[in-house]
Length: 93
Image (cartoon, rainbow, N blue to C red; front, side):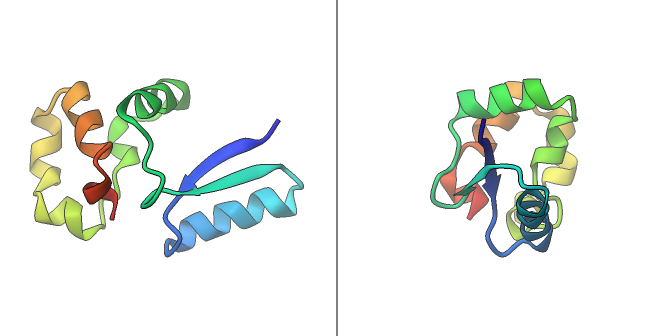
C-alpha cells in the first residue's frame, strides 16, 4: 500500500516527513497541495481518519491564515465552513 501525502514543497516539516517515509522504506506518493488541492470531501475523509482537531490542518503560521484572521474566525466557523475554506486552491497557495 502506498500512503498519499499532501504537502507544501517549501515546508521544512513536510520535507522531513517525506524523508522519514523514504528512510523507513514506506511507500509514499507526494502530492503538491498547491497544485493538487484535495476536494472538500477528501478533506472531510482525511479529517475523520486523522483523529486530530481540524485546526491542525491549517497552516497557522501562513500568510493567508493571518490575512484572513483565522485565529479569531475558525472557532466560530462550522466544520463544513472550515472544510470549504481549506479546499480552495487560493487558500493553500
